[in-house]
Amino acid sequence: MNKQRTGSVTGWLNKVPEVALSFWIIKVMSTTVGETVADFLAVNAGFGQGVTRSVMAALLAAALFMQLRTRRYTPWIYWLTVVTVSVVGTQITDLLTDGLGVSLYISTSAFAVALATIFFAWYQVERTLSIHHIVTHRRELFYWAAILCTFALGTAAGDLATEALGLGFTWGAVAFGALIGITYAAWRMGGNAVLTFWIAYILTRPFGAALGDLLTQAKTYGGLGMGAMWTSALFLSVIVILVAVAQIGMSVSHTNQITK
Image (cartoon, rainbow, N blue to C red; front, side):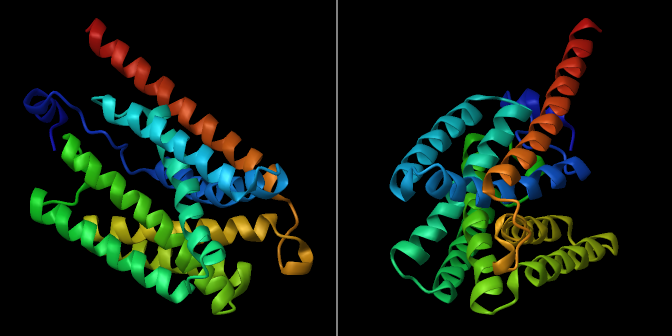
């Protein structure tokens, strides 16, 4: 799709990054951070679940406000929003499971239905689910509603697989990693690009959650014992570096276009 033409019609450029290797690396690490940061703030930092939820909800509102005000993809704002959505999505599932006692089977099913409903409404209104066409406020609202739901669904599905079904952290990460590999192979063999993207996007959440648990949990519980603080710090550092590179590259590209 010609972005210059789109921008001339709506005044916007696409608000979502190109789907490249760096996109998936940051996405997986964001999902892991969503798992580890929520645990660190609530347990290790001693904030408790209530305060942590309030703080992260406020940060998500601020990040979404900035994201919705921009008219083009801005790496640091976009990925800040993804990270905060990841944490909040994790907290929603944890609240249902640990706070309200909702079965993981029920929450996984409910989030799957909610996501299907969002996709149905999005397609009925916009006639596309492509992330290469996020060029209006309405499409962006559909997009972020879907993203939040994928994180909540992925958390529930990951916990269902690793805990309720007994796969454990290692085999959970292997299983979801294998499903992502199958989805990639399907795309390479000519599968629908939009469908395979959203399947992979959903699967990276339970994969990241299982990976986060594997890294942070004590060895007696089947983890590697790195702890939530060090895992969060490591992954956040990598995310910051990759986003900074993207931000600098975009700034240089924008400057070159102005000077031409």
